[in-house]
Length: 287
Image 1: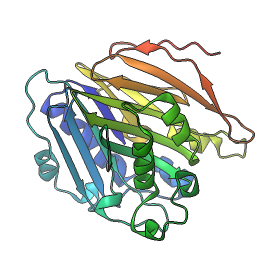
Image 2: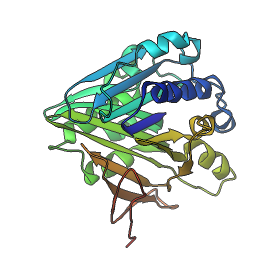
Image 3: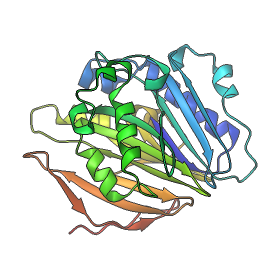
């Protein structure tokens, strides 16, 4: 998974997608935690101008590592020099029993009265907490698609901290998560990672798989899952804290939202947020 925000040259966008391609072909952390060595159930990318003026959404059910690199480059549109964009890209490893189709391929898409919502996600949601546990059509779509539809129905103008807290309450085993809301004259992007540490001997594997990294680029920053970050060898990548999410609205500045998954009862505890920007980490004060 990759979520990038800022101004990027074409070669930098290709670098991000090539790192995703390599990680999808062999993910040692997914293999250790879930027994899945590759992410071969489709891939997709969203690229949108932060001012909301244009966007491109591409998805395929082919493995990204089976695509010709030239074909991958073709889906990257030409952007004016200095244009600020968001890029969300994902290679899918479908959960057992989950369908492999375009609707379920990330970034998944849902409509809201406030704009188009796109979601990328590593992990699994409990469908009964999303409201479609008894839906007879659930076999046609993934839990991430259900999460996008449910989140879109809650939004009132922007994705709020309360909206994210509700969504995290539907997690099953943890999540890397990126969301983009395209509506009006600015785009909102929310990205972060949230996972439990259960003291069951698997915590090291969970951290290696679910840990999210923030990687520096000259004109912006990219948030990358662990295996992708390791392939971005030219970039300075540093982990963000478990339970930390960054919310951007049309600019480089971001709010910091932090949540904790309590060891007993999986209770989400809320913390105060701070502000940050692409050239530095946000300040956060815990209460």
